[in-house]
Amino acid sequence: MPTATAAQLSSEAARAFVERSHGLLIGGESVAAADGRTFETIDPATGEPICAVAHGGAADVERAVGAARAALEGPLRKVSASKRAGMIYKLAELIKANGDELAELESLDNGKPLASAKGDVAASIAHLRYYAGWPTKIEGETIPVSGRDLFVYTLREPVGVCAQIVPWNFPLLMAVWKISPALAAGCPLVLKPAEQTPLTALRLGELALEAGFPEGTVNVLTGDGETGAALVDSPGVDKVAFTGSTVVGREIGAKCGRSLKRVTLELGGKSPNIILADADLEAAVKGSFQGIYFNSGQACNAGSRLFVQAELFDEVVSRLAGFAAEAKVGPGLDPESQFGPLISEEQFARVTGYIDSGLAEGAEAVAGGLPEGAGNGGGYFVNPTLFTGVSDEMKIVREEIFGPVLVAQPFESLDEVAARANDTEYGLAAGLWTRDISNAHKLAALLKAGSVYINTWGAGDPAAPFGGYKSSGIGREKGHHNLDAYLETKAVFTQL
Ligand code: NDP
Figure (cartoon, protein in one colour):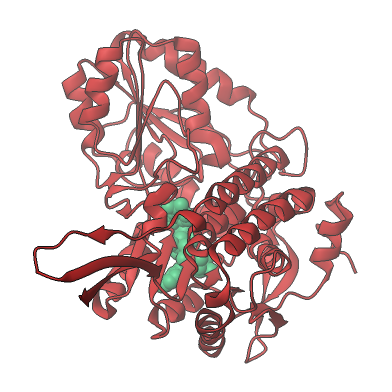
């Protein structure tokens, strides 16, 4: 029987997917969890269950890791680089062919507006197409060494079985960011989506099979944090890639340090966005508004700390508050909605807790609050919220909120704002708006962040690296940087 939530879907294929049973994808088959457990995934716009999904446990982790190992040592090793490239490209084509289904599933499961979900599908296709170009270009070197009569060359080999743990804010796109470089390098993987958003990862796993990857190359384990922890602990895993909170990232990094597994971490942020007095005001305000409220603020690179040069401060705040008042917040599947709900009751409590803490610490909310009925069985909606009158010490200024909450502060000089912008444990992204090219590059050099946006926010490309300084992570995703994280280098010495 279609649930009330599934009935909202207009894609027949998406409805049919929701109504199917949802096992774990292990070794090319959909299987129940060894102990038969399931959990419900929830529609964040209503708080109602969408469907039940298998809950992978420790025994399933070992099955999935075993299937990945068997693929690595068997059929996957025999796939040539050009065939692998073709499979990655075909996966991109299959995502395109099934784009409406994937976008609707994502919008339903995550709550994001359908147009944003379609954007994620398009970005996923672009990502796979980019990495489809790599398998045929992974080359070693010949090394001129000093020892006599030695011929030395390097081989670049897949790092091994990969555990890939992704969050709920861009479920399909984050899964694609993870699997593309692994597949390009020839690594099999076990993908663990977030418990809030398991659906598109399961569909992605099916499409990978359809694209021709040998069984066991792409395994998908739905479950919770314990499933993820068991995966990280599995002795059969060679490399862990994680995107999520800094707290869990630290734990995973420490475990991987002890077991000497390769690890890349893409974690939280509290990214500064700086508007200088000579900026194109209209572009700066529009860009800054999207920079924080896009995806309802649930983005690791959200521009959550706004610094405005003092003479422009009141004008910028008043324009942002005007946009916020007009913003349409609603269910993702409603075409009118610009911003969807937060992902879960837990996240709703967390974000509203931060708003309360801001008010208690004396900040002034010039926009925001909750739509009528929100949180009480009416979906996890929070309006775009803007605080002024904040100090650098307040919790809402220092901690990652991961919701639609912006704090705005005035500044006087470039050096002052660079120091305040960098006064955070995080370093994922930073942005600045100015017409002065010299100030732009001076500030870009001073800001301690993995991405710096000049006169834009959130720009990216599959070829350009993305990742964090400081507590925002280790390593880079995208581009050849991420491919390197899935390769080992072997030096071969031959006595001539
Ligand atoms: P988590 O870091 O807990 O979750 C991210 C992923 O890790 C999920 O797949 C989760 O599984 C899994 N996981 C959880 N615990 C472990 C563990 N011990 N070992 C291995 N894997 C684990 O984020 P939350 O969903 O709890 O969100 C909390 C906060 O994290 C947010 O408010 C935000 O600040 C931040 N966050 C940052 C993200 C980013 O893109 N940088 C993305 C998401 C959250 P499961 O969800 O099934 O428990």
